[in-house]
Length: 374
Ligand code: BGC
Image (tube, rainbow, N blue to C red; front, top):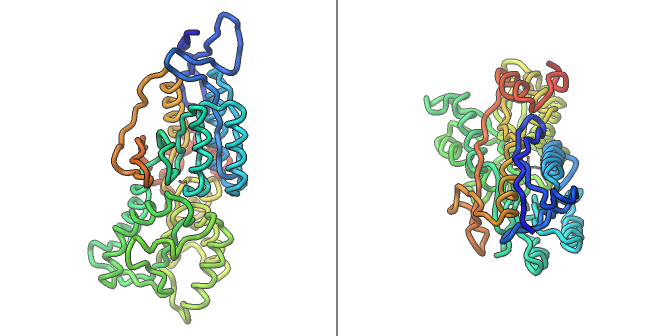
């Protein structure tokens, strides 16, 4: 059966997406677009890590809506940050006939066996945001440039402190993301390539001693599961064990917003309040609570990844797969998963500070003014 490409304008959260065709426009059927000649049936399983973080809820729901509007069959699952649950959800999607799997892995190292099953029914696998390692059976990777996320955090800190101008010494406490998340080492490397030279020169001092000597040691300061409460207790420990008298922390490298929330809570309970001596704190994601914290002066910046553009990119990839056309990528070098270099599409992240909240986040519809107290 041939597939008609309806170019419907699908208004999905402000973004206009090209709609995938429903094959049987004559029968008026919705759902379960059949395969184009040489293409694939539009039956998509989406596997997201957790509902506990705002971004993944948005990611999953936006893509699901766009695909449903395009008459695809879609199954969206969240795995409560539990690897076994994610594997069994993917198994169910395969059993349900999924021909395309979009997976944001909880643990990038453990999905090879389930992807082997996916390949037996010729499913195409797109790693979403996080790479899946150790398998031939991942076809594409769509993400933001993860190294650049960290680089933007490192450069922000260096600029704010005028490190290039020789200022210092400043007390720094660095954190890294979850050791099982392939992205976390890229975030850390991007930031540490900027900051480590200043640590070596003594312009940045790390009183806790938790300063990896090289990027490879990043997991030693990783926070499992990106958990806010674990970041909070780690920061509590550092402040109570390594800071005394009127010694103050000047800057915290936080790789994302969920860690920043815990770090802010810890600082607050140690008596820090926004004002002149308040530390610089980085973040990533532009979660609502953190945008509020930025407006309140409790967080200095976040690296914004407009997840709507990631959803659009994956939608475009699916559109090509369904039509049997070549999938557009823009990076075929960076993401080696141990078995192959996975063809990737990397999107650009950008810094958001207090003055950008209205123009970048609110005006674009990413957050509602009322939700962040504007
Ligand atoms: C994502 C970040 C997110 C983190 C925690 C990473 O893989 O790229 O955007 O903050 O996971 O969920």
